[in-house]
Image (cartoon, one colour):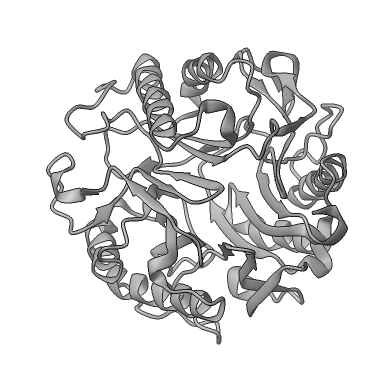
Length: 415
């Protein structure tokens, strides 16, 4: 059956300069699973609510998310995962106190990032939410943030939100699962590696407690605070995922929830439905190029994973599927190549562009956001997916200035 799209939005509302003729969806529902566009305090007329007030902007973002969920047949209580992007860590207490009040007794899993910017300079926070409606979700290892490294924040969270098929995991860092100690207390590459090892060990524990294993993981998103940490953390990831071949996206951000965090990993995991996940174009990272260069990071990855009716892709850039870099210094050309890759990979996984439910666009400069997003949405055409955009510090190589994450759900005969 086709996806249900709710709360149509003008793409121009996500962009800093100039109109975009394309629409996107505030929410898309396929079965029990709901995807949402990243929401902020942007109003329909392009103004920003709560100027200079992080708590008011969080309220406005949650109002937008709540309206989308209500239209999809759910509520804020159906949220399973939040990714909260702040432009300044100083806003964190006001943002999370507001989230804690609005989401009392929900216990979502969460990832917290400090990003280089959002679509408009006036924005202070953006919230990406995921939800499961009409199916039981088990919340494991619930906690109060005030008990987590003595943070004076009124927030309730969980380490795992496990649905019938999707398993949502809190972004894992170098923190012990009880918040008692932090691995890698310095800022050296070896500290980042120690944090990565702790995070991946935690991940294996949490998946096991949810009745899953590491080979249920379909995608990893790796966040680090400095490109210098890549060669330290990726071999650790490679050791923990040896032979599994998830898809991956690697992002450099200015910071995380606390200054001592250098590394955070997000995962998407789905229970296997009687057979292993299909992993398309498996490769070893040492044998491929990132931009112009090869990087000795010793990981087993792939380009696309199909898990039941879900398809996720490796983050796509201006590097084509034959490892040739296109569009150096030309963001729209990089986006064009990335979307050509997307079409091919979806096809190889048995999906189509019209199956796409969520696109997340990363750029390294706000000046690139409109032109890159226009290319992405032009290729997606009638899919009318949910959309998120973030301005980040960097990508795997300096010449890469954009990356796009794509999630699809198969429809009709393909499903």
